[in-house]
Image (cartoon, rainbow, N blue to C red; front, side, top):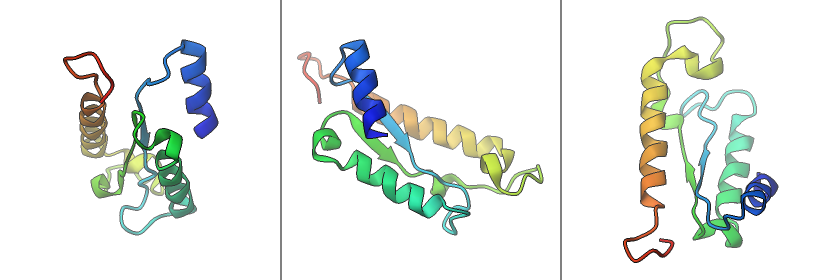
Length: 107
């Protein structure tokens, strides 16, 4: 993930391009499959010194886990629309917080 962020920023010549890392939330507080390991790696990326205060945020999504209408075994957040709405709002709020200040500098 760190290489992906670096590559996109370099390609776009945007060293402070904001990135939101959406934490693997399948299973909510009871992680499913290997999601706990993935969450750890996602947090570690956001906390890397080069990213920590450089427009990269980790947003946990487990808190938005809802039971769904589909029997898909927990994949895709159970297909629950409320879950996706809440995650989208959290991502948008993070992006807004990372916008440059009125003085034109990075936050």
